[in-house]
Amino acid sequence: MGGVRTALYNWLFARRHGGTFILRVEDTDRTRFVEGAEAYILEALDWCGITPDEGPFRQSDRQALYGPHVEQLLNSGWAYLAWDTQEEISAVREAASAKGETWQYDASTRLSMRNALSLTSAEISALVQAGTPSVVRFKVPADRIIDFTDAIRGGVSIATSVMDDKVLMKADGMPTYHMANIVDDHLMEITHVIRGEEWLPSAALHVLLYEALGWDAPVFAHLPLILKPSGPGKLSKRDGDQGGFPIFPLEWTDPSSGAISAGYRERDYLPEAFMNMLLMLGWNPGTEQEIFSLDEAASCFSLDRVIKSGARFNPEKACWFNEQHLRSLPPAKLVAPLQSLMAGRVDWDDADCLRVLGMMLERVTFLSEIAEASWLFTPPTTFDAKLVRKKWKEQTPEILGKVSDVLQAAEPFEADVIEADFKAFLEAEGLGFGAALLPLRIVLTGLGGGPSMFEFAEFLGRNATLERVASGVKLVEKLKAEA
Image 1 (cartoon, rainbow, N blue to C red):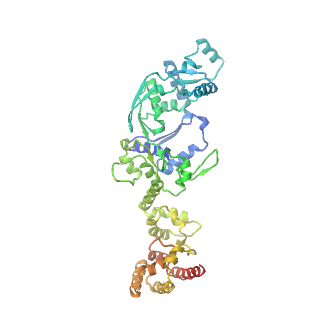
Image 2: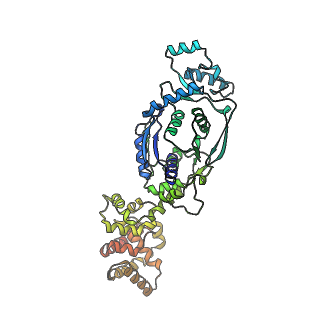
Image 3: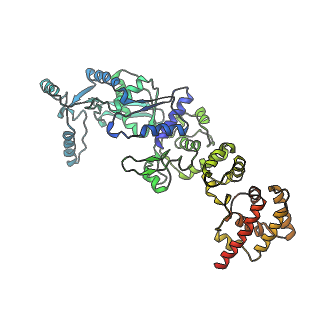
Protein backbone atom coordinates (compact mmCIF):
# COMPACT_ATOMS: atom_id res chain seq x y z
CA MET A 1 0.00 0.00 0.00
CA GLY A 2 2.78 2.43 0.86
CA GLY A 3 4.52 1.89 -2.47
CA VAL A 4 1.28 2.32 -4.42
CA ARG A 5 0.45 5.52 -2.52
CA THR A 6 3.90 6.91 -3.36
CA ALA A 7 3.34 6.05 -7.02
CA LEU A 8 -0.13 7.63 -6.89
CA TYR A 9 1.12 10.92 -5.46
CA ASN A 10 3.87 11.04 -8.08
CA TRP A 11 1.32 10.31 -10.83
CA LEU A 12 -1.04 13.00 -9.54
CA PHE A 13 1.74 15.58 -9.28
CA ALA A 14 2.92 14.78 -12.81
CA ARG A 15 -0.62 15.05 -14.20
CA ARG A 16 -1.31 18.30 -12.36
CA HIS A 17 1.82 19.95 -13.76
CA GLY A 18 1.93 18.40 -17.23
CA GLY A 19 4.82 16.14 -16.33
CA THR A 20 5.74 12.56 -17.16
CA PHE A 21 5.16 9.55 -14.92
CA ILE A 22 8.21 7.30 -15.25
CA LEU A 23 8.72 3.82 -13.84
CA ARG A 24 12.31 3.17 -12.83
CA VAL A 25 13.30 -0.20 -11.42
CA GLU A 26 16.09 0.36 -8.90
CA ASP A 27 17.56 -3.12 -8.98
CA THR A 28 21.27 -2.55 -8.41
CA ASP A 29 21.22 -4.56 -5.18
CA ARG A 30 21.11 -8.03 -6.71
CA THR A 31 20.98 -9.70 -3.29
CA ARG A 32 17.45 -8.32 -2.92
CA PHE A 33 16.29 -9.22 -6.42
CA VAL A 34 12.87 -10.89 -6.42
CA GLU A 35 11.82 -12.87 -9.47
CA GLY A 36 8.51 -11.64 -10.85
CA ALA A 37 8.47 -8.41 -8.84
CA GLU A 38 8.75 -6.15 -11.88
CA ALA A 39 5.86 -7.87 -13.68
CA TYR A 40 3.83 -7.61 -10.48
CA ILE A 41 4.51 -3.86 -10.22
CA LEU A 42 3.46 -3.28 -13.82
CA GLU A 43 0.27 -5.30 -13.43
CA ALA A 44 -0.57 -3.55 -10.15
CA LEU A 45 -0.05 -0.06 -11.59
CA ASP A 46 -2.19 -0.97 -14.60
CA TRP A 47 -4.99 -2.27 -12.35
CA CYS A 48 -4.77 0.89 -10.26
CA GLY A 49 -5.18 3.06 -13.35
CA ILE A 50 -1.77 4.78 -13.21
CA THR A 51 0.10 3.07 -16.01
CA PRO A 52 3.54 4.70 -16.51
CA ASP A 53 4.08 7.02 -19.46
CA GLU A 54 7.64 5.73 -19.85
CA GLY A 55 9.58 2.73 -18.65
CA PRO A 56 10.37 0.53 -17.01
CA PHE A 57 13.98 1.72 -16.94
CA ARG A 58 16.16 -0.81 -15.12
CA GLN A 59 19.22 0.50 -13.35
CA SER A 60 20.96 -2.83 -13.91
CA ASP A 61 20.75 -2.08 -17.66
CA ARG A 62 22.21 1.40 -17.18
CA GLN A 63 25.38 0.38 -15.33
CA ALA A 64 27.72 2.03 -17.85
CA LEU A 65 26.21 5.44 -17.06
CA TYR A 66 27.29 5.50 -13.43
CA GLY A 67 31.03 4.73 -13.63
CA PRO A 68 32.14 8.11 -15.07
CA HIS A 69 30.34 9.96 -12.29
CA VAL A 70 31.96 7.78 -9.64
CA GLU A 71 35.33 8.59 -11.23
CA GLN A 72 34.46 12.30 -11.08
CA LEU A 73 33.87 12.03 -7.35
CA LEU A 74 37.12 10.11 -6.83
CA ASN A 75 39.13 12.65 -8.83
CA SER A 76 37.58 15.63 -7.02
CA GLY A 77 38.21 14.18 -3.57
CA TRP A 78 34.54 13.65 -2.73
CA ALA A 79 35.00 9.87 -2.72
CA TYR A 80 37.73 7.35 -1.93
CA LEU A 81 38.55 3.69 -2.39
CA ALA A 82 38.25 1.35 0.59
CA TRP A 83 39.51 -2.23 0.91
CA ASP A 84 37.97 -3.17 4.27
CA THR A 85 36.33 -6.58 4.25
CA GLN A 86 32.87 -7.02 5.73
CA GLU A 87 34.42 -9.19 8.43
CA GLU A 88 36.83 -6.40 9.42
CA ILE A 89 34.05 -3.85 9.62
CA SER A 90 31.85 -6.22 11.64
CA ALA A 91 34.70 -6.86 14.09
CA VAL A 92 35.22 -3.13 14.70
CA ARG A 93 31.49 -2.56 15.12
CA GLU A 94 31.13 -5.47 17.56
CA ALA A 95 34.12 -4.28 19.62
CA ALA A 96 32.52 -0.85 19.93
CA SER A 97 29.19 -2.42 20.85
CA ALA A 98 30.86 -4.41 23.63
CA LYS A 99 31.93 -1.08 25.12
CA GLY A 100 28.40 0.29 24.84
CA GLU A 101 29.34 2.46 21.89
CA THR A 102 27.86 2.85 18.41
CA TRP A 103 30.35 2.73 15.56
CA GLN A 104 30.00 3.94 12.00
CA TYR A 105 32.38 4.48 9.09
CA ASP A 106 32.68 8.28 9.10
CA ALA A 107 35.03 11.27 9.37
CA SER A 108 36.05 10.30 12.90
CA THR A 109 36.89 6.66 12.08
CA ARG A 110 37.86 6.51 8.41
CA LEU A 111 41.58 7.04 9.08
CA SER A 112 41.66 3.92 11.23
CA MET A 113 40.34 1.75 8.42
CA ARG A 114 41.89 0.32 5.22
CA ASN A 115 41.22 2.97 2.59
CA ALA A 116 42.92 5.40 0.27
CA LEU A 117 42.86 8.12 2.94
CA SER A 118 44.71 6.08 5.57
CA LEU A 119 47.12 3.95 3.52
CA THR A 120 50.41 4.94 1.91
CA SER A 121 50.83 5.14 -1.86
CA ALA A 122 52.84 1.94 -1.79
CA GLU A 123 50.17 0.10 0.18
CA ILE A 124 47.51 1.32 -2.20
CA SER A 125 49.53 0.26 -5.27
CA ALA A 126 50.06 -3.19 -3.79
CA LEU A 127 46.33 -3.66 -3.17
CA VAL A 128 45.46 -2.49 -6.67
CA GLN A 129 48.08 -4.69 -8.33
CA ALA A 130 46.88 -7.70 -6.31
CA GLY A 131 43.32 -7.09 -7.51
CA THR A 132 42.04 -6.83 -3.94
CA PRO A 133 38.30 -6.09 -4.03
CA SER A 134 37.44 -2.51 -3.13
CA VAL A 135 34.42 -0.27 -2.81
CA VAL A 136 34.03 3.43 -3.37
CA ARG A 137 32.86 5.43 -0.36
CA PHE A 138 31.52 8.97 -0.26
CA LYS A 139 33.64 11.32 1.85
CA VAL A 140 31.12 13.09 4.05
CA PRO A 141 32.60 16.41 5.20
CA ALA A 142 33.08 16.81 8.94
CA ASP A 143 31.29 19.37 11.08
CA ARG A 144 28.75 20.65 8.58
CA ILE A 145 25.03 21.23 8.82
CA ILE A 146 23.12 20.23 5.68
CA ASP A 147 20.08 22.43 5.20
CA PHE A 148 17.37 21.83 2.63
CA THR A 149 13.67 22.54 2.24
CA ASP A 150 11.20 19.68 2.12
CA ALA A 151 8.00 20.51 0.24
CA ILE A 152 5.95 18.82 2.96
CA ARG A 153 7.98 19.32 6.14
CA GLY A 154 9.58 22.70 5.51
CA GLY A 155 13.16 23.38 6.57
CA VAL A 156 15.27 20.33 7.46
CA SER A 157 18.75 20.42 9.01
CA ILE A 158 20.97 17.36 9.42
CA ALA A 159 24.46 17.39 10.93
CA THR A 160 27.13 15.49 9.02
CA SER A 161 28.34 14.14 12.37
CA VAL A 162 25.47 11.64 12.30
CA MET A 163 26.16 10.59 8.71
CA ASP A 164 28.38 7.71 7.62
CA ASP A 165 30.52 7.41 4.49
CA LYS A 166 28.07 5.45 2.35
CA VAL A 167 29.29 3.02 -0.27
CA LEU A 168 28.64 4.44 -3.76
CA MET A 169 30.11 1.63 -5.85
CA LYS A 170 30.27 -1.98 -4.68
CA ALA A 171 33.12 -4.38 -5.29
CA ASP A 172 31.22 -5.97 -8.18
CA GLY A 173 31.15 -2.62 -10.00
CA MET A 174 27.45 -2.11 -9.41
CA PRO A 175 26.42 1.26 -7.97
CA THR A 176 24.41 1.43 -4.80
CA TYR A 177 20.95 2.96 -4.68
CA HIS A 178 22.29 6.33 -3.55
CA MET A 179 24.66 6.77 -6.49
CA ALA A 180 22.42 5.35 -9.21
CA ASN A 181 19.42 7.26 -7.91
CA ILE A 182 21.15 10.65 -8.01
CA VAL A 183 22.62 10.11 -11.47
CA ASP A 184 19.33 8.86 -12.91
CA ASP A 185 17.35 11.70 -11.37
CA HIS A 186 19.74 14.20 -12.96
CA LEU A 187 19.88 12.53 -16.38
CA MET A 188 16.09 12.06 -16.45
CA GLU A 189 15.57 15.70 -15.45
CA ILE A 190 13.56 14.80 -12.36
CA THR A 191 12.32 18.03 -10.78
CA HIS A 192 10.59 16.60 -7.69
CA VAL A 193 11.53 13.56 -5.62
CA ILE A 194 8.38 12.40 -3.82
CA ARG A 195 9.08 9.38 -1.62
CA GLY A 196 8.38 7.83 1.76
CA GLU A 197 9.40 9.28 5.10
CA GLU A 198 11.87 6.44 5.64
CA TRP A 199 14.14 8.10 3.04
CA LEU A 200 14.33 11.39 4.92
CA PRO A 201 17.62 10.49 6.70
CA SER A 202 19.20 9.84 3.27
CA ALA A 203 18.18 13.24 1.90
CA ALA A 204 21.23 15.00 3.37
CA LEU A 205 23.54 12.55 1.61
CA HIS A 206 21.72 13.13 -1.64
CA VAL A 207 21.98 16.90 -1.24
CA LEU A 208 25.74 16.49 -0.75
CA LEU A 209 26.00 14.24 -3.80
CA TYR A 210 24.31 16.87 -5.95
CA GLU A 211 26.75 19.44 -4.57
CA ALA A 212 29.74 17.20 -5.23
CA LEU A 213 28.66 16.55 -8.81
CA GLY A 214 27.95 20.22 -9.45
CA TRP A 215 24.24 19.71 -10.13
CA ASP A 216 21.16 21.49 -8.82
CA ALA A 217 19.18 19.32 -6.43
CA PRO A 218 15.49 18.62 -7.12
CA VAL A 219 12.71 19.48 -4.70
CA PHE A 220 12.34 16.80 -2.02
CA ALA A 221 9.00 15.76 -0.53
CA HIS A 222 8.86 12.99 2.06
CA LEU A 223 5.44 11.41 2.57
CA PRO A 224 4.13 10.41 6.02
CA LEU A 225 4.16 6.80 7.13
CA ILE A 226 1.01 4.70 6.88
CA LEU A 227 0.31 3.63 10.45
CA LYS A 228 -1.37 0.46 11.71
CA PRO A 229 -5.10 0.72 12.58
CA SER A 230 -4.40 0.92 16.32
CA GLY A 231 -1.35 1.41 18.46
CA PRO A 232 2.05 2.77 17.47
CA GLY A 233 4.06 1.80 14.45
CA LYS A 234 4.06 1.47 10.71
CA LEU A 235 1.48 -0.70 8.97
CA SER A 236 2.92 -4.12 8.19
CA LYS A 237 1.93 -7.38 6.52
CA ARG A 238 1.48 -8.89 9.98
CA ASP A 239 -1.14 -6.26 10.79
CA GLY A 240 -3.03 -7.25 7.66
CA ASP A 241 -2.80 -10.96 8.51
CA GLN A 242 -4.03 -10.35 12.05
CA GLY A 243 -6.73 -7.85 11.07
CA GLY A 244 -8.00 -9.79 8.08
CA PHE A 245 -7.46 -6.99 5.57
CA PRO A 246 -5.15 -6.86 2.54
CA ILE A 247 -2.08 -4.66 2.30
CA PHE A 248 -1.06 -5.60 -1.26
CA PRO A 249 -2.85 -4.23 -4.34
CA LEU A 250 -2.87 -7.69 -5.98
CA GLU A 251 -2.38 -11.18 -4.65
CA TRP A 252 1.29 -11.72 -3.78
CA THR A 253 3.18 -14.95 -3.20
CA ASP A 254 6.18 -14.61 -0.92
CA PRO A 255 9.10 -16.12 -2.89
CA SER A 256 10.90 -17.31 0.25
CA SER A 257 8.02 -18.83 2.21
CA GLY A 258 5.47 -19.46 -0.51
CA ALA A 259 2.83 -17.75 1.64
CA ILE A 260 0.03 -16.21 -0.41
CA SER A 261 -1.40 -12.83 0.57
CA ALA A 262 -4.68 -11.77 -1.00
CA GLY A 263 -4.75 -8.36 -2.62
CA TYR A 264 -7.37 -5.66 -2.80
CA ARG A 265 -8.28 -6.87 -6.28
CA GLU A 266 -8.91 -10.41 -5.05
CA ARG A 267 -10.94 -9.08 -2.12
CA ASP A 268 -13.29 -7.47 -4.68
CA TYR A 269 -12.29 -3.85 -4.14
CA LEU A 270 -12.76 -1.55 -7.08
CA PRO A 271 -9.45 0.00 -8.19
CA GLU A 272 -11.12 3.42 -8.06
CA ALA A 273 -12.02 2.85 -4.41
CA PHE A 274 -8.57 1.53 -3.51
CA MET A 275 -6.89 4.58 -5.03
CA ASN A 276 -9.38 6.98 -3.44
CA MET A 277 -8.62 5.42 -0.05
CA LEU A 278 -4.86 5.81 -0.60
CA LEU A 279 -5.34 9.39 -1.82
CA MET A 280 -6.96 10.39 1.46
CA LEU A 281 -4.41 8.45 3.52
CA GLY A 282 -2.05 11.39 3.97
CA TRP A 283 -3.65 14.15 1.86
CA ASN A 284 -6.77 16.26 2.08
CA PRO A 285 -8.26 18.76 -0.38
CA GLY A 286 -9.05 21.38 2.24
CA THR A 287 -12.78 20.78 1.71
CA GLU A 288 -15.36 18.25 2.89
CA GLN A 289 -15.08 16.24 -0.33
CA GLU A 290 -13.89 12.67 0.15
CA ILE A 291 -14.88 10.89 -3.05
CA PHE A 292 -12.53 11.52 -5.97
CA SER A 293 -11.83 10.01 -9.34
CA LEU A 294 -8.19 10.02 -10.40
CA ASP A 295 -8.84 12.87 -12.81
CA GLU A 296 -10.59 14.91 -10.13
CA ALA A 297 -7.73 14.33 -7.72
CA ALA A 298 -5.13 15.30 -10.32
CA SER A 299 -6.90 18.60 -10.94
CA CYS A 300 -6.48 19.72 -7.32
CA PHE A 301 -3.56 17.71 -5.91
CA SER A 302 -0.82 19.72 -4.24
CA LEU A 303 2.03 18.79 -1.93
CA ASP A 304 1.14 21.50 0.57
CA ARG A 305 -2.02 19.54 1.44
CA VAL A 306 -0.03 16.41 2.37
CA ILE A 307 0.10 15.93 6.12
CA LYS A 308 3.39 15.71 8.03
CA SER A 309 2.38 13.20 10.70
CA GLY A 310 1.64 9.53 10.12
CA ALA A 311 -1.64 8.58 8.45
CA ARG A 312 -3.58 5.88 10.29
CA PHE A 313 -5.12 3.17 8.11
CA ASN A 314 -8.76 2.35 8.80
CA PRO A 315 -10.02 -0.94 7.29
CA GLU A 316 -13.65 0.09 7.81
CA LYS A 317 -13.04 3.33 5.92
CA ALA A 318 -11.52 1.34 3.07
CA CYS A 319 -14.78 -0.65 2.85
CA TRP A 320 -16.75 2.61 2.91
CA PHE A 321 -14.81 3.94 -0.07
CA ASN A 322 -15.61 0.78 -2.01
CA GLU A 323 -19.27 1.08 -1.12
CA GLN A 324 -19.41 4.68 -2.34
CA HIS A 325 -17.65 3.98 -5.62
CA LEU A 326 -19.70 0.85 -6.26
CA ARG A 327 -22.93 2.79 -5.89
CA SER A 328 -21.70 5.64 -8.07
CA LEU A 329 -20.94 3.45 -11.07
CA PRO A 330 -23.53 3.12 -13.84
CA PRO A 331 -25.14 -0.31 -13.33
CA ALA A 332 -24.46 -1.17 -16.97
CA LYS A 333 -20.72 -1.20 -16.19
CA LEU A 334 -21.27 -3.84 -13.53
CA VAL A 335 -23.25 -6.28 -15.68
CA ALA A 336 -20.22 -8.12 -17.08
CA PRO A 337 -18.42 -8.33 -13.69
CA LEU A 338 -21.60 -9.65 -12.08
CA GLN A 339 -22.09 -12.25 -14.80
CA SER A 340 -18.50 -13.35 -14.26
CA LEU A 341 -19.14 -13.74 -10.54
CA MET A 342 -22.31 -15.71 -11.18
CA ALA A 343 -20.76 -18.08 -13.72
CA GLY A 344 -21.60 -21.64 -12.77
CA ARG A 345 -24.32 -20.55 -10.36
CA VAL A 346 -27.05 -19.01 -12.46
CA ASP A 347 -27.36 -17.81 -16.04
CA TRP A 348 -28.54 -14.21 -15.77
CA ASP A 349 -28.82 -12.21 -18.96
CA ASP A 350 -28.07 -8.47 -19.07
CA ALA A 351 -31.63 -7.54 -18.15
CA ASP A 352 -31.61 -9.89 -15.15
CA CYS A 353 -28.31 -8.43 -13.95
CA LEU A 354 -29.58 -4.88 -14.24
CA ARG A 355 -32.66 -5.75 -12.20
CA VAL A 356 -30.58 -7.44 -9.51
CA LEU A 357 -28.18 -4.51 -9.41
CA GLY A 358 -31.10 -2.14 -9.08
CA MET A 359 -32.31 -4.07 -6.05
CA MET A 360 -28.98 -4.76 -4.38
CA LEU A 361 -26.43 -2.01 -5.05
CA GLU A 362 -27.64 0.18 -2.20
CA ARG A 363 -27.37 -2.76 0.18
CA VAL A 364 -23.91 -4.16 -0.44
CA THR A 365 -20.33 -3.01 0.04
CA PHE A 366 -18.79 -5.40 -2.49
CA LEU A 367 -20.21 -6.80 -5.72
CA SER A 368 -19.28 -10.30 -4.55
CA GLU A 369 -21.90 -10.01 -1.80
CA ILE A 370 -24.56 -10.36 -4.50
CA ALA A 371 -23.05 -13.65 -5.62
CA GLU A 372 -22.98 -14.79 -1.99
CA ALA A 373 -26.70 -14.03 -1.58
CA SER A 374 -27.81 -17.47 -2.75
CA TRP A 375 -31.47 -16.68 -2.05
CA LEU A 376 -31.42 -14.43 -5.11
CA PHE A 377 -31.33 -17.52 -7.32
CA THR A 378 -32.09 -20.49 -5.03
CA PRO A 379 -35.06 -20.89 -2.64
CA PRO A 380 -33.83 -20.70 0.94
CA THR A 381 -33.61 -23.87 3.02
CA THR A 382 -32.32 -22.20 6.18
CA PHE A 383 -33.98 -19.34 8.02
CA ASP A 384 -32.99 -16.69 10.55
CA ALA A 385 -33.87 -18.60 13.73
CA LYS A 386 -34.03 -15.52 15.94
CA LEU A 387 -36.32 -13.73 13.51
CA VAL A 388 -38.57 -16.78 13.17
CA ARG A 389 -38.97 -17.06 16.94
CA LYS A 390 -39.84 -13.38 17.18
CA LYS A 391 -42.03 -12.83 14.13
CA TRP A 392 -43.50 -16.20 13.15
CA LYS A 393 -46.83 -16.51 14.96
CA GLU A 394 -49.46 -19.22 15.06
CA GLN A 395 -51.57 -17.36 12.50
CA THR A 396 -48.66 -16.62 10.16
CA PRO A 397 -49.26 -19.61 7.82
CA GLU A 398 -52.86 -18.53 7.38
CA ILE A 399 -51.83 -14.93 6.68
CA LEU A 400 -49.27 -16.06 4.11
CA GLY A 401 -51.92 -18.24 2.50
CA LYS A 402 -54.01 -15.10 1.94
CA VAL A 403 -50.90 -13.25 0.73
CA SER A 404 -50.49 -16.00 -1.87
CA ASP A 405 -54.00 -15.29 -3.07
CA VAL A 406 -53.08 -11.61 -3.42
CA LEU A 407 -49.97 -12.53 -5.38
CA GLN A 408 -51.96 -14.90 -7.57
CA ALA A 409 -54.44 -12.16 -8.44
CA ALA A 410 -51.96 -9.31 -9.02
CA GLU A 411 -52.14 -8.23 -12.63
CA PRO A 412 -49.75 -7.43 -14.13
CA PHE A 413 -47.25 -9.08 -11.80
CA GLU A 414 -45.14 -5.98 -11.28
CA ALA A 415 -43.72 -4.40 -8.14
CA ASP A 416 -46.04 -1.35 -8.07
CA VAL A 417 -49.16 -3.46 -8.54
CA ILE A 418 -48.03 -6.09 -6.03
CA GLU A 419 -47.29 -3.39 -3.44
CA ALA A 420 -50.63 -1.65 -3.94
CA ASP A 421 -52.57 -4.91 -3.69
CA PHE A 422 -50.55 -5.97 -0.64
CA LYS A 423 -51.27 -2.71 1.18
CA ALA A 424 -54.97 -2.98 0.31
CA PHE A 425 -54.96 -6.50 1.74
CA LEU A 426 -53.35 -5.32 4.98
CA GLU A 427 -55.90 -2.55 5.36
CA ALA A 428 -58.81 -4.88 4.68
CA GLU A 429 -57.51 -7.44 7.18
CA GLY A 430 -56.47 -4.84 9.76
CA LEU A 431 -52.90 -6.13 9.78
CA GLY A 432 -49.62 -4.30 10.22
CA PHE A 433 -46.64 -4.69 7.93
CA GLY A 434 -44.80 -6.74 10.53
CA ALA A 435 -47.49 -9.41 10.58
CA ALA A 436 -47.28 -10.11 6.86
CA LEU A 437 -44.29 -8.49 5.20
CA LEU A 438 -41.62 -9.89 7.52
CA PRO A 439 -42.94 -13.45 7.24
CA LEU A 440 -43.08 -12.97 3.46
CA ARG A 441 -39.46 -11.83 3.51
CA ILE A 442 -38.51 -14.86 5.62
CA VAL A 443 -40.02 -17.40 3.20
CA LEU A 444 -38.65 -15.62 0.11
CA THR A 445 -35.10 -14.98 1.37
CA GLY A 446 -34.60 -16.74 4.71
CA LEU A 447 -33.44 -13.40 6.16
CA GLY A 448 -34.80 -10.33 7.85
CA GLY A 449 -33.28 -7.74 5.50
CA GLY A 450 -32.74 -7.16 1.83
CA PRO A 451 -34.34 -5.40 -1.11
CA SER A 452 -37.99 -4.54 -1.58
CA MET A 453 -39.94 -7.78 -1.50
CA PHE A 454 -42.26 -6.39 -4.15
CA GLU A 455 -39.34 -5.81 -6.53
CA PHE A 456 -37.90 -9.19 -5.65
CA ALA A 457 -41.23 -10.92 -6.28
CA GLU A 458 -41.43 -9.29 -9.72
CA PHE A 459 -37.88 -10.45 -10.43
CA LEU A 460 -38.70 -14.03 -9.42
CA GLY A 461 -41.97 -14.08 -11.32
CA ARG A 462 -45.38 -15.16 -10.10
CA ASN A 463 -44.89 -18.92 -10.16
CA ALA A 464 -41.46 -18.92 -8.47
CA THR A 465 -42.71 -16.49 -5.81
CA LEU A 466 -45.75 -18.64 -5.00
CA GLU A 467 -43.60 -21.77 -4.89
CA ARG A 468 -41.21 -20.12 -2.42
CA VAL A 469 -44.08 -19.03 -0.18
CA ALA A 470 -45.60 -22.51 -0.12
CA SER A 471 -42.34 -24.39 0.42
CA GLY A 472 -41.09 -21.79 2.90
CA VAL A 473 -44.18 -22.09 5.09
CA LYS A 474 -43.79 -25.89 5.19
CA LEU A 475 -40.10 -25.71 6.05
CA VAL A 476 -40.50 -23.12 8.79
CA GLU A 477 -43.41 -24.98 10.35
CA LYS A 478 -41.37 -28.18 10.29
CA LEU A 479 -38.41 -26.45 11.92
CA LYS A 480 -40.61 -24.98 14.61
CA ALA A 481 -42.15 -28.38 15.31
CA GLU A 482 -38.72 -29.96 15.65
CA ALA A 483 -37.35 -27.19 17.86
